[in-house]
Amino acid sequence: MLFSQYMHEWLYGENGYYGSYHPIGKKGDFYTAVSTSKFFGGSIAQHIIKRIDEGFLASDSLICEIGAHHGYLLADIIEFMYTLRPQLLQTLRFGIVERFDALQAQQKSYFEESFGDVIKLEHYHDVSEINASCAFFLANEIFDAFACELFYKGKIGRVEEGKVIFDVESPECSAHALKYKKDRGEIAVGYESFAQSMAQSVGKFEFMSFDYGELDARSDFSIRVYQEHKVFPLFDEELDMQKAFGTTDITYDVNFSHVKEAFEAQGMKCVQYSTQLVALVEMGVLDLLATLKEKASDEIYIQELEKVKVLITPSLMGERFKMIRFVEE
Image (cartoon, rainbow, N blue to C red; front, side, top):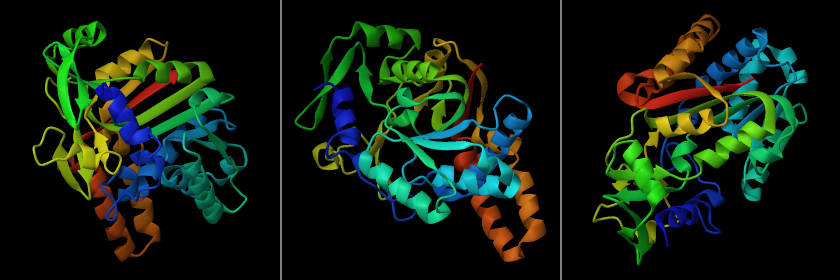
């Protein structure tokens, strides 16, 4: 079995890791920006409001998260919108693209607990199902969850009895590796079809995504497994791949040049690529903290400040994570 097929089954198969709910944060296998601070979603809410004020987004746009897990991020955006511009909740649509029915049910339950019948959450199994004239798409750590091929000196890997064997010819992967000047590493599968589906789904939209990686492809393997906040490189002798299969998260660093190329090939324009630090500061996370300082106790302010520091400190999430943003007009 090619590694891309193996990884897809690992994450999305019948007994795959993403097929059921896993906690994120202290009780889970890893942290995300969403599990760190609600101000991550608050900053994005401010950006959406700004794009509406600028006239790019309509006041009845669909705000849609792709791969929302529990639904916390979209819910945080809605909560901040209620504070910043409550009238928009009467006109905007809110949706989640989630392929698994079980996770859709959990997301729906969470939104009902959080908002009652005030927010009508829309669900889609795929981006291609969406029908909207204007939308804002959002994804957090989605591109690192696409299956990938493993490439090593002209061959791609297949999995046999829990071991990766590099003996398969792939002209397409070899051409990709030559293009990005790498003799080994991960080659993501599916960016092109995903970009095409998005381009065909909505007439006018903005897509914002956060992930970890670099604009320049690294000629090395970054693929790794997360379990209870411990990191195991895939080729670590201590890792039992067969035991880890489907029970742990598997991921790799994103080649943002590949992402950019896939979306630009569909006519979308890349309007921003930056560190998470720069993105959140530009979207006003510090302004939100200043407002909180005026209205909340010192204790609450300090608690939230420390959480935001994790998001923007360069040595933590600030520079390790990147934001890329595309528009289709």
